[in-house]
Every structure is written in structure tokens, then in C-alpha cells.
Image 1 (tube, rainbow, N blue to C red):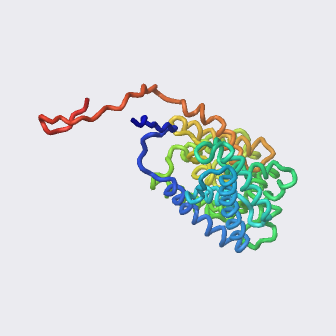
Image 2: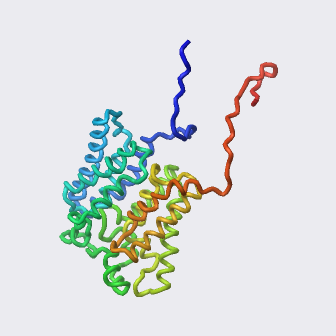
Image 3: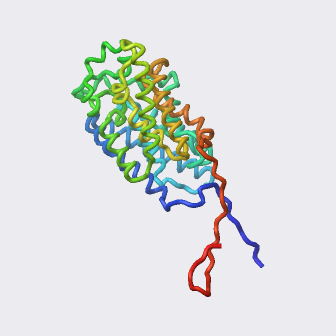
Length: 336
């Protein structure tokens, strides 16, 4: 008699039937408005960075899976999402080799070295970006004031957060809040297109691809902490609305902090994680050497995800599955 074979796998064991490809393609679709805005603003350079970033992320994933003789899974779209997210965080004039290296580091070091999708503790796109940012040789490529100086965009070619860091709030009168919301600000190819990112994020929430808890708590964290700082000294610290409308806050709230593999799944874990990301963003903006703190905030909070997933208002004792049997006498199903 052939012995019974059991397959053991990590949770979840019961799911709603959603496929990984559907999630990835919805994410790509949600990012399309930001892509269009980025191409409209920066032209062919934006197309170059986006195409190179997506292709290098997919090549990196296929290559490492081939080397370790694993099934090649680039068709699921997760590598393409990583490449596109990274591209939207970069300036349009960044050299090609920097884009390639960032994607290889993000995919191989930030994802595949931990076992692939679902096992990575941090968002691969953020890992690739952070390595470039902390490398002295390449950190200048993420200086938007320097990298975007030669573009004719029709708006002020000064990174709002860098201006705040250098000159305080008195210099912010040159920036119109409505213009910032409409994406007329220096920054990443698509991350600065606030209205487009917001539209894509709301699409993901309505489609059920992401939960609304993390983005809302992220934005609440930014508002609450920046409001406290602003009350303390209005000449140094900007008001909450300025923080919401600048930098990577919006893309961080809807696309970076909601990464399924590296964010909490428990409701209260999402609340703590989202609020922590928002609060840490403002703290890093105010007290660190970096103008924007969204990416480092998400990475730092990601280290606490295993602990945050244990937050519960009430411990639930797992119950065994009930077996459905057939009551032949009555011709109906009964639960035993």
C-alpha cells in the first residue's frame, strides 16, 4: 500500500482565491497614472529609466533563480512591480548602470537571498534605493536639485524638502500647495505626482488589493507628529499639509508600506506599523541629514513587523476544522 503523502506549507492555508499575478498587475495598473505624469514631465529620460529598471529587475530574478535551479517566476509580475517602484523613486537623469545595480541588489539581496517572494523581510525596491543612497560614490545621483537642474518643467526646480532643510519655513512661500498636489514639484519620476499616486492608491483600496488601515495610519502619523513639531517652532518645522504634499509620503503610504510580504497582516499591527512609518518619516525629515525620510522609515519599521503581527486585542484559540458528514436518514447535511 502506498504511504500517505502530506504536504506541509506555511500559512495561510485558506484564502479567498486571489492570485499573485492579479495583485501584481493591479499594482502595475495603479501606478500607470504616475508613469504617464513622469513621462509627460521628464520625457524620454523617464521612459529610459522605467524600461531599464523593470527589465533589470526581471533579469535579476530570472538569473538568480536559474543559478539556484529554482522555478523562474518572473511571469507573476512581482519583479516588474519592484522595478517600476524603484524607477518612480529615482530622478529621470540617473545613469543606467546605477538603475541596474540598484535592481540587482534589491532583487538578489533584498528578496531572493531570503527565499524569494513572501519570505523577504523588507521591500526589495527600498533595499535597492537605500544601498544607492548610503553609498558615498552614488549618493549624489539621488540629489534632485543637482540631477534635474537642466530640465524645462514649467515649475520651480528646487526640491521642496531640501529647501525646508536648508532655509527653514520662510523660504516655502515660493511653493504653492495646489501646485504641489498636482505634481508640479521636483522629485522622483512618479513619486512627486501626488494626485496620480493618490488616484492609484484609492484604486487599490477599492479593489481590495491593499487594506485601507496602513495608508490611513501612515498619513495620520505624518500629520500628528508634524503638527506637534510645527506648534513647537513654526520657523523651522513645516505644517502638516506641506509634509503630506511633498516627497515620497503618498507613494510611501499606498505602495511602499503596504507591501504584502514585508508588512503586518494583523489589524492592530497595521495600525502600529502605519502610524510608526508616518511618525518616523517626520522625525527623520526634521532631525536627520536626509531631506526625506519615507524610505528609511519604512525599512526601519519593517524590522519590527514580526513583533507587530503579535498585537491583538484578544487572543484567539485556534479551533479544529469541523467535519461535514451526510445525514442519510434525513437527506441533509449535518455538522459533527
